Image (tube, rainbow, N blue to C red):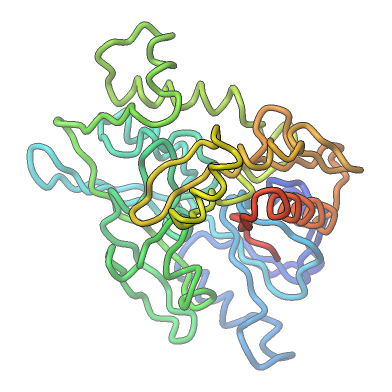
Length: 344
């Protein structure tokens, strides 16, 4: 394990933005992680550990400039299982495990609960941070706990579901715990027999019909989700992107009714006392779908996705492009979009 200097991060972020880290290290164990943190060269310059960044799959991040500190690539690997009873199992995955591969591992074991989250980019370690979700399922639905390293004490702590304070694409790790912890492993409670099949959200039912499936298994649901995602979401290996760039906004019922008067066709989903509106629909109505400015474009099949169209876009270009989208949606609908991608 060595700390490298002036290290290119182009292949370590799914946007493919060509930036560099002043220092870079890849760690494969908790011991190596602690050692790197103690050796952090920026400590001598700032006397604080703030100039450090942890990378997983690099799928939910946008670098707008070079990183003037230490970037740590977390490559902690391993999956373990513990049978609880005849219908439940605890599955623990280290933070460096690829998320989709982990989901497929569970499906091959006939463990249910993660199938609707198939083909989401990134690693297991970032899943609680975002409370990742898709097609009616969120991490919090199956999350039991995660082990984290406290960056101030360098001691390992455990966070349960309640302590993580999960919200829509949100958790304690994006709020008051931001920059204070690094997730080492995550434990999920999954089913082994009596699976809860969720097909009512999005286009899953229609996709299953195309597959001629009347009584779907969790494996069928996963295949349907994969087909849907592949049909409208670009592969980061082909064209740089970070998946959904914006959160779906939630607005008050009163505000929604005001918007609905002017735009009666607006899709919406009740969310407690609020109403969730698809950001992709808002963006498309503003004429952004398929639009390109310079090196950056809004994907032609899914307006929620911003792409590095030429492969030469800078992070600042992508950020500015997203700002234009935010401004136009606010002007047309009076709704302010929030970026889901972490901006560095």
